[in-house]
Each structure stands twice: as structure tokens, then as C-alpha cells.
Length: 494
Image (cartoon, rainbow, N blue to C red):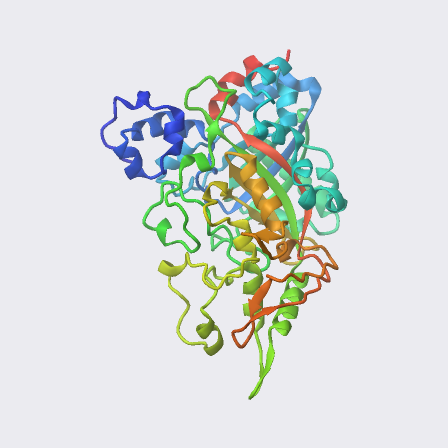
């Protein structure tokens, strides 16, 4: 990408100033720091954080290291061929082509395994930094209503103990789709685990005695194709992310647009374990969520029945599509809820892309409204890079949720004060229906929907089965490239 003449005075900019600017080429060129961005910052940031890599599949490799091989593991990590945001920049921010791209995330337990305790306490002191405390305490302790307590009963065995690291291999290799299709067959788990271990070892040169590893396979959509990203309920996914370095094409993308372009501080923070001035990393949250399609459809059917009324010419029905859109907050193709007249009279086409940011008609308790804070809360936004898991015939399928953010508070506010909270702008509207517990009667004075006649109605709902359940999760940090390549070995335990 042609960046024009190099700027000689970029060194005077502090990293906090760079991160606070909206991440668009015009803003950086106007500040004369575009060369700093290309030379210093982007080579430090791992790929897939500021922009999706564009690959069809992602292999999630969860590692628990062997204590007897600590030094060899450190050397292996140092030599990992990590893809960077600079690599994506050179590709025109359109992904990373057909080659595999590797991203490394470390848990707090991983840092404890690798680093000298004095080094950790000196460079990332627990006092005064709530994010480091959150990193240490973990997901279940920080989000107890969502992923602690009663929900711990649904956690899969693999996630009972925290992993040391998560290696993401973004790939277009169709072999991953073929392996995924065999995982649920008789004797398929053992065979596919062996095949995945070989794929992982070939891509990363992981030693057989370096530790234990288990895998998840993620795909863009149920077909495993290059089509639009969708989840198992049929809705487009990942369409309202913050935009970094947006092109004219990304500006046409469906979904609410808050700050466009967004500041890099939304997702990046200084990596204090690297001596490099512009070394940045990002906190990451991984969740495995199982989607229960029948439960979701039954919930929508019940909502549609509640909002269908008797009219002078017979019953006026709210259809299934509208009810499902009420729960999510938009239609399956990503377009916003239709204005009432269009809903009832079926007049005119769906709004065009230029109107996709509208929240008009979206219930306050809808999933996207609770998961995407509005009203001066844009600083609480997160970058979502999730994939779906399973296949059409799988007994279990859902979302491998992955988010990046500069502070865990951004994620925790969405979960604790959004999806699982009952108040929104002092309105008692209840928690997100997608995560409601089985048997919960969800009756609240302010939980209202428009019925088939256009009147606001309070509805009485019963959840027969949770639409989405928690299967596992963990907090990670995506370290700067220089920490892995230059600082890790000197900092390691003897």
C-alpha cells in the first residue's frame, strides 16, 4: 500500500496519542503519524484483532504446557510464525490470502507458568489495575450470573481447568471442513483428534512432549463457504463491529455505525511486558456457547401468539419472522426492524444499506440492543471475531465467541449490566431472552412489544428451554509480537 513520503517527526507522538485517534488513514496522515503506524505499531499487533483475517476456518488449539519442557516451550513460542496487523496492512486490509495465519493468546495461568513471579509483579502489578485483577480471577468469578454458579453445570470437561494458551490457526484448508464433518461419527472423535494434532504440529512445529492440547473447529457459516457469516439461528453475525481503517466498501456494511472509524484504544492497550515503546496487545474473551434452535423457534412462536390479536375481519397474526426479529433486534439478513406500517401492510422493500444503522423499532430488550451499548456508551464496545462450530447433523452446535477489547470492563459491562441485567436507562425490561433460564417467567412493566395492530403490549412469556447455554470459556491476552520474539526468553523462570 502506497503510504506516500515518510514522516520524520512521528517519534514525538506518545503511544496514548496514537491510540486515541480515530483509526482512519486521513486522521493519521493529518497527524503525520502514518509512518509510525506502519513502522512501529502495526508490526507489534497480532493479526485478526483490528480486522478479521478473512479465512473460512479457524482451528482453536487449547494448550496446557508440560512443566518439564518449559525452556523448549519458550523457544517454540518465540519462533512461532505469528501473523501481524502489518501483514494485513500490506494486503490492503482485506485479509491474509490463502496462507495460514497464526495468532497466540496467553492466559494468566500461562504467564504464571512461563514468567518469573517477580517479573510479573514488577511489570504488571495487581494493585491499581482492575484489568489485571480480572485477568487473574477469571471469567466465572467476574461474570458469576452468566458463567458462574448454576451455569457451571453445563461446562464441558475440557474447560474445567484453565488452559495456558490458545493458538488460533486461521486457514482456508478444506481439510478442516472434512474433519469437522466426521467429528460426531462413531469413533470419529479419536480419529479427528489425531488428524487435528497433525495439522496443528505441521503448522506450528509443536513438539509431541510439549503438553496437552484439545481443539475446536470454527467456520464462517454453516456451509463452511466464503459467504456471509451466519450463526445457527440463521442471522448474519459480526455486522456491527467497530471499524478500523474503513474503506468505502466497509462503510456500506450492514449494521449500526457508531464511531467510524473507531479509535485504536477501543481494542489496543500498551503491552507493559515489552520494552518497545509502541508495543500493544489486547485482552481477549473466549466463550463456547451452544445454540438450541428448537428452543429459540418455540420462544418466538410463543411471542408471536401473544402479539396476535382478534380484529374485526378475523385474527391479525404476527408471523414467526417478525417474532424472531423482535428477540434478536434485526432480521436474518441484517436489516433493521421494519417500520410498523411496512410490517403490517407489507408495503415497499427493506431499507437500503444507507439506513442500516437505524435502531427504530428495535425493542430495548432485544439482544443486539443489550449487547451493543448506546447512549454515550460507545467506549464499552468490543470487537467480535467469533465463528460457529458443529455441522447440520451435530447434536451440539453453536458459537465459538471471541472478542478483543482494551479492557475487560467493556466485556463485563455488556454481560453483567446488559445481557443479564434487568435495567436499561432505568427501565425494568429484564435480561436478554437468549440467555434466560429455563422456567423463567419474564414479566416486566417495561418489557413491551408492538402487537399485530401496532399497539404496545406487555407480554407473559415462559422459557421452556434456554435458547443459548454456556459450555466453557476463559480470559486471555494477545501479547505484542516483540514480547514473544524478544522479551519472553529473558523473562522466563529458570
